[in-house]
Length: 126
Image (cartoon, rainbow, N blue to C red):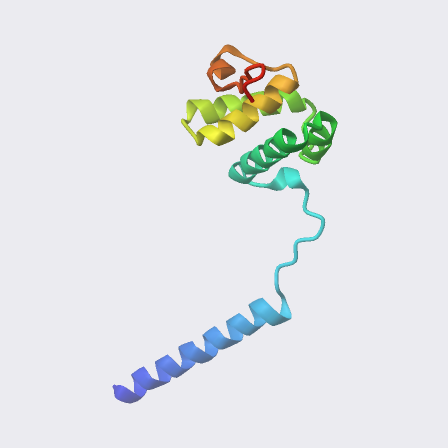
């Protein structure tokens, strides 16, 4: 019985070693030219938030639109609006919501649900 268990463990170790070698060295998965639109929804949302944050830093609406065009969406303002509303409905991070709302507002897509998250500047108050 001990000989059988020893042989089984040795066989499993050799099989695992060969499997790892083939999977990592001989035939690893290669992602070539994968479009950004193939990202999972969670990562698409994170990308849109990052672009919104960049917009807040540089104020370049055209640049933000260009960065979002790689997602392959025909209506970018609607995408930003839907993402902002989804973040609000899901009670996500308030800073992320404010970034999304600022970009949506710059694109002319401000809705009543977004109004409490607008960044309001007071003249002379900074």
